[in-house]
Length: 553
Ligand code: FBP
Image 1 (cartoon, rainbow, N blue to C red):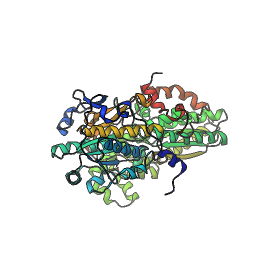
Image 2 (cartoon, rainbow, N blue to C red):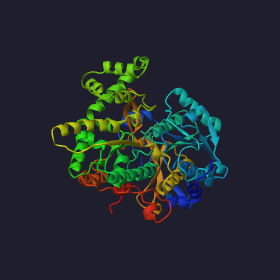
Image 3 (cartoon, rainbow, N blue to C red):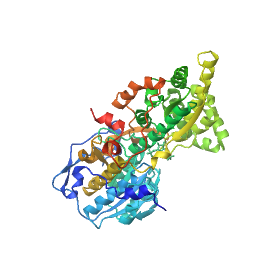
Image 4 (cartoon, protein in one colour):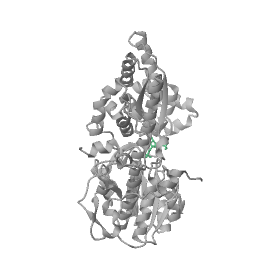
């Protein structure tokens, strides 16, 4: 494959490590705090994770080396949706392993957690890694969404670990994948499989965060990529002055991506699902939010604009939330009948018949495409695949209808022409920004330190991210600490709690303070392309979300 000039140039980028790791592992000491509790459902989780529950937080400090220097064999898995920087996590893990013992080996399991179950693997040496340093994508070993849940899958994973003599498995993934990591760590301890399991916080969605995990990797690069595109569209809208652009943004349930892009680009409207839910807004009220901007701008001669829609929006509109919960239960409890209905039409008819009351009224009132999209397969973790629901088109249809009635009543005289976009895949495999390149390499290196200190059931953690890397700190957080019980596939399951947008948090408050002016005026901001070379203020700046959440000035 021919390499681009940027790809060539990025190979020579040396990612920056937190000071505690930059000196090499000889001076890294791991200290452990007191026992911990899960964020909720403590009794249920204590009994589900008798070996892993309540482990202490691990902090890396400069001191006497506590890491084992023995030769290690470590397996690595990329899990779930792609996120920029995954290759650098693997490179950081590899560099740590080799710093610990040049004989240590890294084995990549292909195609996600399924690679561990099926034992499809490849050894990753310096030559293989070198090809992927500082590049986007997960193509070094591929990814997948297999949920390790059956006794056979657990037993097969243990057999693979034993066959390769694995000392550890590192799972690079989001909330669901790290739930997998916790379950596997527990199972290995229970079965006396001498293999630890470590997670790494990945996801462009930004919803795997808490007090100790300030950001998941990939969020920085993905939002900067979308912000560049949104800024370009804003300039086009302001130049042509004839379109309203409806842009759906990835992010699954959480609206972190939409919020960050709104802070970066100042569109006319940005819907935040968490606020829609908090206010209990109906679809008609959400439509009204958009229409009031369209009407106000039209009165000023501006029949153009840009609207951001988080992909999970409809899950947060109360009527839809109830409908989706009922659909999930129905598809789980009457799965055989549902599957026996062949073709979209028959399935829509089955569901329309089986639903009752308000949910049936809502479902049958929806456009045919949305009806069909709402009953597509759930992902292996039981999530509705919101990226496949065309919410942006639903909103355009709702807005057109409302504007027609406003026009008929004489309160709107403008012209309305819409364009729809969906930005998601465009940002997931971009070259990692300097921030993600550094952060990911550090997370990989920190994962090695956790492994070399014999810790299992931990998530690699690098903090103080709103500051330059020279102030970053590293350690590990027990996975059970982040867990609660949730309803999946019609049953209560242990899962890592998703972090949604905090409506009392600084990023949302900053957005709320500016949105009324943005709705009426044209205050677009054009972030431009990610820069890798140049002043740190341009090249190394973290997201607005991180800065607002963690920096007072
Ligand atoms: P994860 O990081 O949680 O795996 O999800 C990232 C994501 O890009 C979501 O934003 C999106 O809803 C989903 O993956 C799309 O899934 P797929 O890649 O299977 O189409």
